[in-house]
Length: 395
Image 1 (cartoon, rainbow, N blue to C red):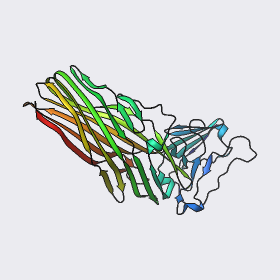
Image 2: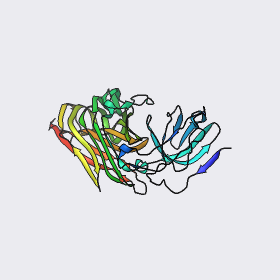
Image 3: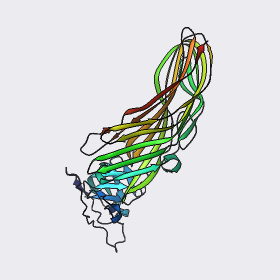
Image 4: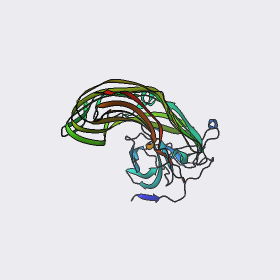
């Protein structure tokens, strides 16, 4: 019969005293010690870890099956006395990694099933810090379990750049709104700094710095009166890229991914045909710093460019396309900050046949930091807004 142990309400106590862990006897040929007790070394300074914090020395998917609420280990890779306990904090630095708290232990003859829940780095590291500066798409390791870029408008993608092919975004009756081409490129340096002090975050910083270059080439055709408001769709999704580091003996995994979506709106009052192209580029620094409150960072200096527009119409018209490039950052397999850069282009023609074309970029941040015994620190906010009149005139 499996043996089951249930979690108590007490959390792991913090201590600098090392905890002895029973392991397999050296002469036992079966299994190996999978649990590696984590404790600071002489070179780790003031680093303080939770008392029962362990690295799981097992390869994800081959030696340990990782699910959202469990870890499953085959008996062939286990030593005879691993010493799992509810409340243990388990970390792994392979692949996407994981950081979990054990809730329940089911030990059987063939396998051990650990029921788990997500844990926070600030629970494992009571005092210390994570300091990482990386280019996730140029220097990160592309994870093997990702099949590759995919999406509606994907033509070619690599790193933080995607080329968009001709793609119909909206087709409704006699209205067609399409991308005829374009691109989105952002391959930033990501700075992630977290200073932890006795179950609290003293300072948190996430900044992405690099050149944003985006181009939108748009065609609108219609045979009558139509209106579409804020219709959203996914265009492209990159593979995940991982960066690996350490806080003392604790492995840290930062996983990054770029997603590209679009939001479109259109309103026409009769037959029309319009084409326009617009682009913008700038070196940007975007992100947020937490130190007794949030400071938003949104530095930029955009330059705009335009192709066209060309018109065949005798009616009122409005069309807007916005690209949303989102850099997602995770610690282990836990969702973290999201930085979104949204270039947009808008074209309007009024009843007096006056036309105007505008281009803009908005930077936003989203997500939250979870702390034990604290409310989440919300990251939602606008980093910057920028717009530029590309052209105007009389038809």
